[in-house]
Image (tube, rainbow, N blue to C red; front, side, top):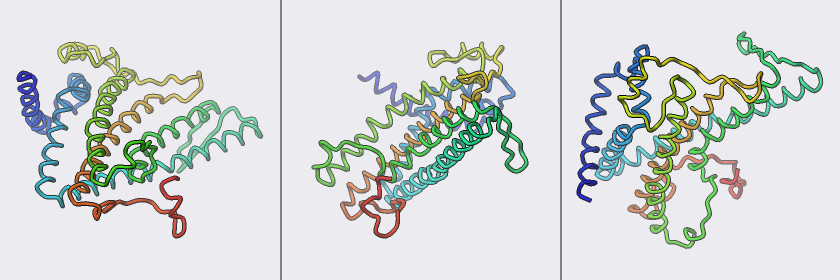
Length: 297
């Protein structure tokens, strides 16, 4: 037990050191013309060192918020604003998906076209009908991945309140805090660590994995080269499937951000009481007279 606590304290202390070192030596991990820098970026992007660096930032912000509640409320407003902003923009991908599906059905069924050309702003894109059809999955993934935190803020997520519903106000806030820290964040962090290497396994060769040590990966850097995945489900299908893997990471990052935000909001409402419920909450509205349907769209 003492060894575990000593390890934890050491990692927390090293987290501040790693943050400072990364900021003062950006070329060691951002200069991708250097293959060793690229490998360092890949390794540390899914490492314990990154986790404790982010954890240290969380600790500092949380302690500052505990001392000065206005600062924590400010964090809540900014973080929820980020989730809302990204979600509201990404939601338009649903309209693009509908328009693209209509275009595919109309041009393929009526004009029997094998290829479709689109030239927005004079930039021509000519791909097979199969490419456009499979590309619909990408827009669907954009909505799912980038609107998840937005849906949470808007109260449009699905939850089963078998135990939660009858609880009193402050008991609910305590449950929310526990769920954010011990359920949402651990699941998201685990998903990030595996998804990170899952992405890079389809961007470079030789392949890397979460179990690789830094010294092994640095030896691989001598022969590393870009090998971006372009193979679709069919020979002429959508050929940018690596984008789905990037969306997975974006999804996880937004979930982590929203979990922290939800923890802060729940804490503030716990200590300030029912009068603070929903304070600064920016939710969409369907208009006057439609209140009964809000949160269900």
